[in-house]
Image (cartoon, rainbow, N blue to C red; front, side, top):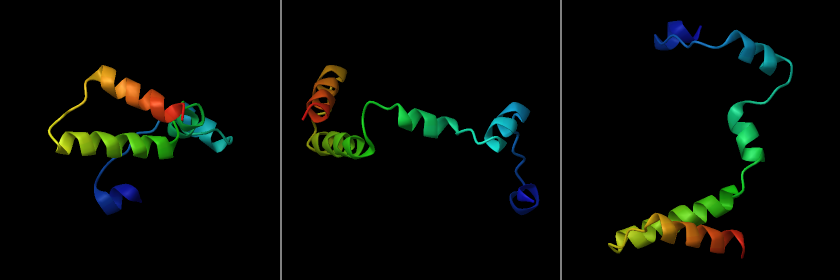
Amino acid sequence: MNFEATGKLIKLSYSTLICLAAGGKILSETNAAIAWITEEETKQVIAYIQEVGDCGFPLSHKQLREHVNEICHA
């Protein structure tokens, strides 16, 4: 049905379909459950990166890591 509507063929692994049909979780759900930073914290980090970048001061990896650690430990 999707192919008829969009013209795009979607390939899915047979084993993935079996796992999902048995109640398994998709990879993004599993990763979200074990993430060390919450969705709200992620939004705060992205907003800070945009704010600093708009001022013309892009963050280095070290500065970004320090800021993320401050948010996570606050």
